[in-house]
Amino acid sequence: MGIIVQKFGGTSVATKVARERVIEHIKNELNSGNQVVVVVSAMGRKGDPYATDTLIDHIKQNDNRLQKREMDLLLSCGEIISAATLSSMLHARGIDNVVLLGGQAGIVTNDNFTNAQIKTIHPKRIYEGLEQNKVVIVTGFQGMTDQGDITTLGRGGSDTTATALGVALHADMVDIFTDVNGIMSADPRIVQNPEHLKVITYEEICNLAYQGAKVIHPRAVEIAMEEQIPIRVRSTFSDDEGTLVTTLAEVKKRAKKSNINERIITGIAHVPNIAQIKVYAKEGQYDLQLRVFNAMAEHKISVDFINVNLMGVAFTVHEDELDQAIKVLSDMGYEPQVTRNCAKISVIGAGMAGVPGVMAKIVKALTDQDIQILQSADSHTTIWVLVHGENMEKAVTALHQAFFD
Ligand code: ADP
Ligand code: MG
Image (tube, rainbow, N blue to C red; front, side):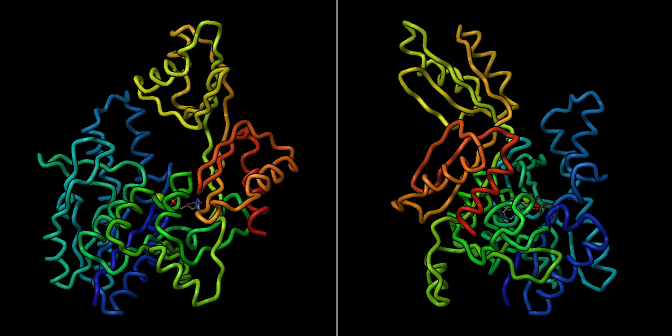
């Protein structure tokens, strides 16, 4: 008998039919003799009555002046509704359970409201519930400060709740249930038949997730990785066994057993809504590079895709921060040249280091489709290209075809 943490995302708890599937997955683990801790997200997506985005919109329509501490009070309600709903349905089917808020489950965070970090977990009440043979339902995405204020953990926070609890409880497995059959070689919303990755290392999925693959939050992966708690990403709506996230040693062992070659490329990820900024140095502006990046840092504008050369600098910012970046640069007397609506596409694979021809393949795949590369960069595990936003889907598809077909 072990402890299994099961996290159910927004679509998994959105409808009664979906919640029936959730209950099937809970029952399966109970029938196998495991103790079950369930972490739930708020029900549904933007527009659904109790979804997180709906709560945010509600405040926008009411003068939009809610302070961060109180915003967290409001945001925590989505998961509470979800947990209470599931609790009722479980009781109706004779499954004893108890609901714990993040704070009651012992999740202590700092007071960085709306984006709090977990400091420690005291899972006493979770153990009490489990000892009483109850399913313990924990509201995802939230914790509590030492002062007793409710906090939320930022986007993807329920994934973090699940893996952090997995670590605190020394769980046998953290199951991340979602609306796809596991981790794919590209977003299935863009690429028609992506490869289903049966097993992947913590580093590989972390990398994919940081580069935009939203299937699991990278922070959640890092937390599990530290204690090597296995994660499975799988679908609520099927019995597919999903993708196992584990150590490199384990991945190699399995590959050897089933005679699979190590892959060069893990997957393709994308990030839309970024803008490219170029600033050229005029005569005498010898310290332009330093001044530009200092100014961005001072205004807490995060920059990416940095390219410094004798002529000046090029970099990208998220579109949300573009107006501020332009203002800062203009106020300094520079004339930034801006390309709006770009997308960053990443080709990711720990096996690409030292393999010749990967970049050539990328350039060929894109130029064959008349897709202009605005900028590129590389590290030993990733090659990034910046393209116009309208080419994003075409570029992801072309690159996927080049490496996976
Ligand atoms: P949840 O509400 O369950 O947390 P998310 O929307 O956060 O669900 O994550 C699931 C989504 O992640 C999928 O619907 C899919 O479109 C997207 N996704 C992006 N990249 C990938 C990938 N490489 N593999 C699988 N899913 C991906
Ligand atoms: Mg998610």
